[in-house]
Amino acid sequence: MTDPMASLPKPPPPPPRPKTRGSYNCGRCGQPKKGHVCVGPVPAAGPGAVPSPSPSYSSGAASVGGGGEQRLRRALSFDDAGTPSSPEKKPKVEEGDGDVEMEGGEGELEEDGEAMEVGGRSVPREVMAEVLRRLGPRGVMAAAGVSRGWRECADRVWRATEELRLRAAGVGLVGALLPRCPVLSRLSLRMESDVDSTTLACLAFSCPSLKTLEITMAANAVNRMTGEDLSCFVSEKCSLSVLKIGGCSNLDFLNLSSSSLSILWLSDLCSLSKSVMNCPSMSELSLCFAQQSNDCTDMVTLMDGLGRTCPNLKNMHISSSQLSNEAVFALESAKLRGLCMLSLILGSNITDAAVASIVRSCTSLELLDLSGSSISDNGVGMICKAFPHTLSRLLLALCSNVTTRGIQLATAQLPHLQLMDCGMSLCANFKNEKEGPYFGEINGGIRFIRKSSTPKKQPIHQKLIIKHGNLKKLSLWGCSSIDALYVNCPELNDLNLNSCTNLHPERLLLQCPNLKNVHASGCQDMLIGAIRNQTLITCKSQSLIKQFI
Image 1 (cartoon, rainbow, N blue to C red):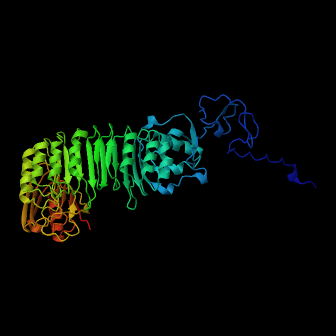
Image 2: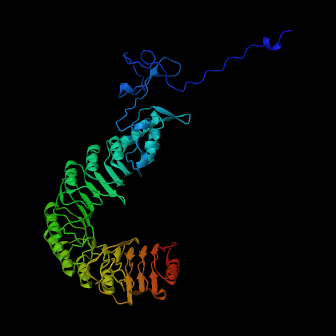
Image 3: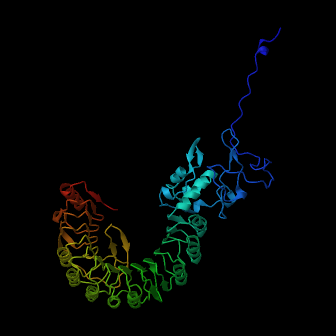
């Protein structure tokens, strides 16, 4: 008896598995690739093919459709910094992280018509590169390790990057990443390790078209660059226009010469033996000195040289306890008539005589900051008479000789005033004199500074009346001598009353319909309730009362 199943036809064999890898044979001569060095001619590429920049990294050809045409794959040019596909040379992404801003629209990305497979679908490479532009450096570097296609898209992103913000724990990551960005013009570094001449040399070599450089230091990092290192870097970078560096405690001198540098910010300076800045295009200068008793910087010589070497200076910020009337007199002899913003803070030896010098030398100031000085109400009166039509921001924090009379005089005679800071000027007590008084900024920030001269005590019971049509921000932080406050400012949107401990709730009146932010840290609960009730009644929109702890 025959088996009925034997007479049935055999099922067809299963279809072959789709080919997921490239050919193991050479695309030129057909020989096996392993141990093979091809000397055959390069086949003609199709219209959509992209020539390989390096034949030694060219892969085999992939068949297109069912015809006999073949197209070479894009070759990858691996640099010496290592590639994510090789673990022994893979950059340590964990050492650096940050946010990246890559400007340069879609027109600056390379377009070649090739596509890559993502999730089983064909995606144009320029679209994938546009997606990667939204990631930070960590994401872009991680994406480069997925496949060759992703690596190529990541390289496109780096090649089109014009602005980069990066946090790095060493110069190794910076040196491996920056050469991939040939058109980089704006760089912001947050260094978590020490910075020295090697870092500057790496930046000078890797960024040929750098225009803006900002370096900030983490808490445990030390800036070890010297004055000679900085001078060589500035002289080599002919295109550099903006330079901002923090933690410059090891700069023993300044000798900068550049025809392109227009903005210079240096902080934590100390004991400069020489200060020469031959920068005719400079329009903004900020020098912040560390508050140390052994600082021996000659501020008179520094101010006197600015007029000869930086004639186009418009914005100046100097923070130093060595500021004095003589330094301001030297600034007057420099004849910087184009100054629009002048900030000379923490100079306790600056008096009304320096204010008279400023009035004579400057004709159209828009911002004046004399915080920490010893000017009085007479100096405030001179300021009001000299700049009634131009001054919009006046900062007199930590000016213990200024009283409510001077503040009310400024708000009455400066019609274009938009910002007024009188933090710690009207202070009834000084419990922290040995440690350094508090300094209140317009945003409610707090920091400690030292002051050489002991300010005089203000009367405890003072009444302050402020009426102004254009004032938008008012800071009375730490004014503990005020017990009554009346503010009538229709445009005011930010009011700082931090540590106004003696202000009585029943003697507070706020008529500010556009008030949005009220800072009331350290105030009594009843005062906070009175502020909330008045702002809810008088404001057009819901006010925000910030009570910082």
